[in-house]
Length: 335
Image (cartoon, rainbow, N blue to C red):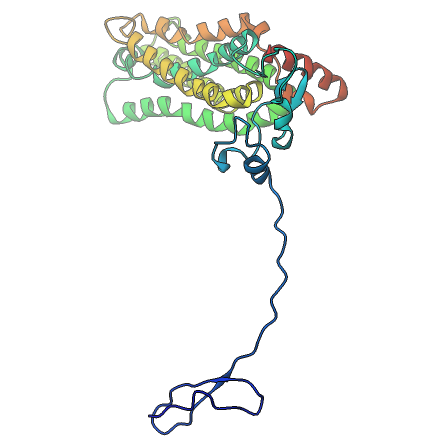
């Protein structure tokens, strides 16, 4: 092994860097070629750059960049509106008067009424989701569905048909909501809940025919129909109500109002489990009353329909006249 001369000239006139050779192979040399420096590219300015350089006195200056991609609300100050981060500094400049800075949107009366009325669908959804378990022994005894393989299968189908109806409802309701609007769709869902609750309650009060088997068949068919109808309404509720809550609420309140659907649903399940206990309404002769309780929120929603404002977002995409109506509703929701 040997190394070449450190200063060995080459025919090209460049200095060479020696490399070690192994065994008897010749020494390989690589010339240094000077490369011209590339011009520096100017980086595009972003809103985050402006926030940390030009808007250092802004209240949003200390926020993380991931949280400052855009404003979630419009900030007004002395009749000046800032709708982007580039204009945010204008809203916080010193003013001669003592006008306070207002952030549009909050828990206004119109917003609370509209959201509270809409989540009644979630209460009905939770009630019908849990009303078959507590009173099951009394219901099966009165309907003649005693313990047995075939009867167990019939009862299981009676309970699970709710899920089939929900699958149908959540698949079809988006087209209905886009066609007639969110408000009318929610009112239609309440009517379907009312019909389903009536069918479920009627399964326990059918007239007594001569044959007990015939009475059992009629009651079971009514219960199956009621469960399927309530399933359609429940599946529709899981799509339309969260959509409606998100469209009427300000951006900074959408998370809080969005959780109201699940919270109200769990409340309905809890009420169904408590009221359906055998010590209360979950016994023979009283379970039809227990099943009819699902109609109370539906009737309440239909009575309070005036609180249920139409979605401004749906109206804005319809026509110019509806867009003007959307502005009026949005002004009412924001107070």
